[in-house]
Length: 107
Image 1 (cartoon, rainbow, N blue to C red):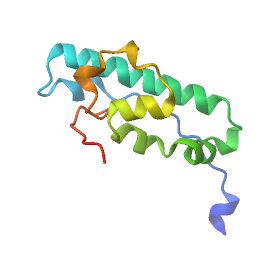
Image 2: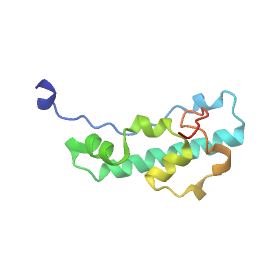
Image 3: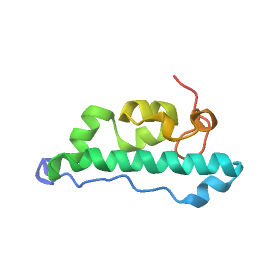
């Protein structure tokens, strides 16, 4: 009952620190991954901006899943889910990585 009385606090996509990318990634890959992460964060914030203030997370979750789940799926799947044009980055370099730079295999 307590959870019902507490309003949903908005959780916007927060950019990941750039220093996480530098471990073991080539500079070109790190640059493209940074671009992709920025595009994903911008799109999440754009979508959430269109929802009612107290229901942003819930409405976003119904349509796309949680923000954390989006950031752990591979970049190609995240772009497709959020309807982001994959020609904005060199998708070949980063398609199988998540937002943290780790390899993710499609399920």
